[in-house]
Length: 324
Image (cartoon, rainbow, N blue to C red; front, side, top):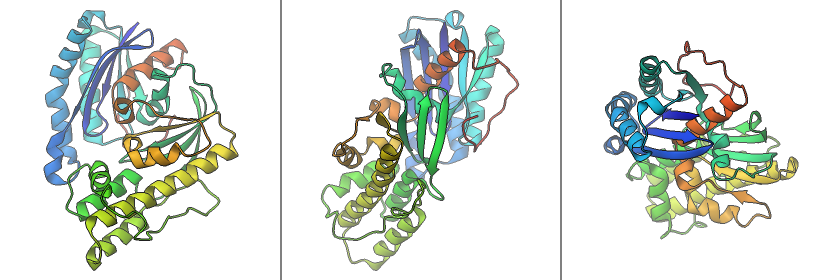
């Protein structure tokens, strides 16, 4: 069975082909147009998806030496995410479904992230702890098997990726903020400024980054430290907070391994400190950390194989929500 996957939950336009649980071809277009605005502009994002989806789909089919008639089903992200972006992808996918008279499969974006590690690590044994860290989400999950998950904790306000983005914007750095802060942090003193580590000592697995973000804003306004020192100390506070909760979950649930996914998983300081833990840590490849259609098509194929879907074409997008 060949499934075409479509991912448009935010500002990455992704298309992929999956067959026999292997990715035949894929392509992800990151919308660089948002850099000039310092963040994702929803209306522009949806228009960019509409502009690029046809050409990217054509490229992915050509790269796999396939045509539309070879597709058996189509899978598309229907939430959570930006409504306009999601609807762009869903409309495109439903058009293909109707034109080819093939099934369409709605996929939860978060569930796809949790299972993306299986693309490269089919041998991975549950249970494992998954730290999902991105611009929109900061969550700790206990993955019991491919279709059974328990949310242990999440951010009560800003996601850590959002904290990076807003911190970078305050320091007049480019978007996305995480890589920019990481870049200048290399020349700063991570121990110079004692930024707070929010909720690090409480008994839950929840996170909070709004207070840390406010502390950075006040620090920049005080004009006492260089941006390099602020960035290094700010990054260290975020990383320490993530690792504290992650390690606590790993120990409490006796997990076989820990998985880090989402865009923030690319942060080298986070990876360095995680590798110091006495735990088995697995990182998906960089292309599977950020939003991609590979994980959408891959999970859809597993759902078909395990009779986890009903092929109902009457579905819509949702901006918020957990795995259902």
